[in-house]
Length: 448
Ligand SMILES: [Zn+2]
Image (cartoon, rainbow, N blue to C red):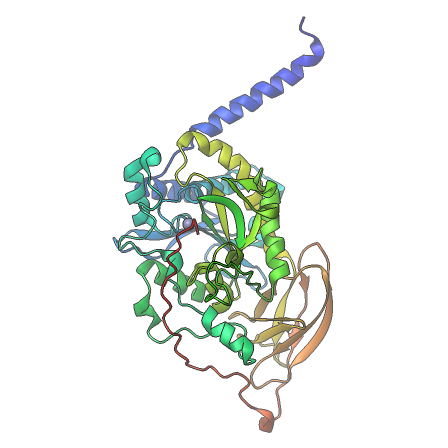
């Protein structure tokens, strides 16, 4: 017999089912034209908090469209961090592309519905979403469809170049500098680098040069694990042995990777796709060493921390799997985004309160410096703790301060630098134009 007390419960269940059915209906694979239409649809639904721009074109001329979310689209506001998500770098790894389209729709809908968490995120962050870095490869894979898709068909771009083996190799230079007390950040690009990379890679590097990104993730498929730098081993000559290649920010990277894996429905459990990764995270090189990847490049060339997310065993899941995958990743995608608000941030000014760009921010004990952006603002991800932080710029006396970082949002720490007496001016860094010998791309083709 039906009791009165079960009726509200039944109603809730029915509502939930209806919600699943309606939200399930818009889950589909998006070919290029469909993806562009979906992004512009979000833009017209949420015109005041979004902007669409292209960072360049693929080999076959498809635009690499980015959807931006911000309370002031198109404008960098000092002290508001920039974040990016990149999907579908390997054309046949398609879940990231669909998740990022879905995330865009979700952010817009929740903002309109007044969701406080999402509203706050969009007000305090400038979010850039590139659902497909390799639209040409995707079309090759999609023509085959989910069932017939081979392991490698559509992985590369139209010239069959693997874009995650196509960035300038700055690791070789860093590993040399580590032994010689050389520069530890913003390493110089090799001569004629533009001629050595694919159009898609070139577009992404120019993008990194134009925006002061703080945090990023690159979405792949073929495994389920959050992979963090370095990808390239420090001793590549030891064959058959995988060695952990820690960055100076290893603890932060591990925490970032864990944020994703634990917020994901099953990544943190460790056993996935026949592999085991403790806590669902791994250092790239300790899995297998990879040269010229994008995440190492982010860390060595810019202020941005990037991790690589492997999100599905099946590189091209069927449409029916998409709703479940979205529910498994939704909280993780939002939680990871929120990590951009940790650590410290602030302004570097001269004595007349003019912002100083390209000032260096160093933290004692972490040999990886950040720099200020064009507005004189900096962002430094840090775990909770007490740190000594130094700001320096050519022609100014450096200034230090001690700060305690808590688990909540970023602590603000500003610096005011005094002009140095003329005679003490000296070049601190040697921007050696050392040409990095071109390394052969790693032949190992895992999911990354
Ligand atoms: Zn991949």
